Structure formats: structure tokens, C-alpha cells
Length: 288
Image (spheres, rainbow, N blue to C red):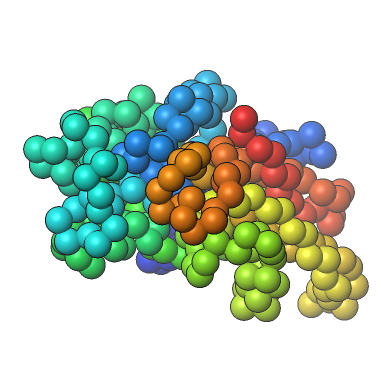
């Protein structure tokens, strides 16, 4: 796996293979909304999926809200009952230190770590960059190279020949951590339809934030520069979460929230077509 930054919000991820065929597949583990320092984080499943990615030597991508980080002094959402005893000394330092200890075994597989609204809220109210601090400590401990990414951006995924030439066009992956309310009925479908207009060049669109899972392929009529008509699909994927729901009381119960979709997603990058007409596509599977 080779990773390079093209601009602030664009990175290129390259995978070298000897030859391409319909059987050629590479896999990424994509996660969002882990809320690691929350009492409600399902750390058992989180560790299980990270272990699976490590065993398969897959790149790992975080798309925001790794940190819950709502118990700071300036946060109106803070609640004494929600803070762990281990965080009472130096809250933000403690959650960064525990994150680094937890992620160190996986650091060299973590390719991209994007911001979410919880991290941006901490920066806005407390002037500290939690993800930046965690990435720097992981680099010092493990020698890892993790690309810190903004709230929304692009990942260009391509296959390379051993001589460095590309086999076909890159798969264009657009992402955002997400926005708006939790969309309990549409589960992000309306946002996906809007994004299809705003991001016409994306082959795959990834989003988190609302703690619901949705896969929504949008078929499109296309035409090449040489006048060849064809059809493809732009796939919109809403990512689940690793936070669980209080069953009987609390803010989520008072708001009438149901249980969230739990886990991460495996994204397989596959080849479709022959040598003269090859295109990459993404196949998405639930990490369980």
C-alpha cells in the first residue's frame, strides 16, 4: 500500500499487483463514530474488527468521531455520570493517551484519520486538536504514517503495475463525516440524493454521523470522451457506529432514538470489464 497526499483534502492510495483480473480484489476497513472514550463504546467489537484488519493486512480508514470527548469543562453536554473514573485527572490528555495505547498495535495499518463533529467541537471550545495529538504520539511510538484528513475530502484508489503504471482509472471515493439530524426514517437517503448532484465525479460516497447503515446505489447514464455510451452506479454508503444505546434512560431515550446500526464496513475494490474497458467498483460488506 502506498499513500500520498495530493492536496489538503485529497489523498491517493495505490496498491501494486502483478496482473489484473476479475478475481483481483483488495480490501479496506472503514469505520466511523467509534466514540472510543464513551462508556457506551462497544470496545470488544471494535478490537475484533481491528484485529481482523491487522491479520489481513488491510488499510484502515477512520471517518470522524473516534473521540466522544463530551466531558470537557466547556461542553454543555457534559454529565458527571458519563465520565469514566480514569479520566478525572486530565480529561483530554487521558482520552488521547488511552487511544494511543489502544491503537498502537494497528498504527501501521491506519491509513487515513478524518475529523468529525466531536473533534471539531473540542477544537472550537478548547483549542486542542485531539486527532493531531494522537497521530503524532502513534508516529513517535510506532513509526506509523497516518494521514490526518479534514471533515470531508477524497480518496483516489488505484491499482499499479510493478513498473508503476496504472492498470485503469482510479476509483474516486468522496467522503464526509456527515451532517444534520439522525434521519430515523430515511436513514440518509435524502442526503445521498443531494450528494449525488453535488459530487458527480464520485464512484463511491462514504458518510457517518447519523449512526445508521444504508447502501444506496444510484444508476447513471454516462458517455466517454470518445462517444461511447455506458451505464454505471454511484454507490452511497452510510456508516454504522460503535456506540450502544442506553436502554431505559438518558438523552437518547428522551429523544426517542432507537438502537443504532453497529460495526464497521469492509470495502472491497474490485475490477469490472476486460483489459480494454476495465473499471474499478466497490463492494461493501458489514464487519461483524
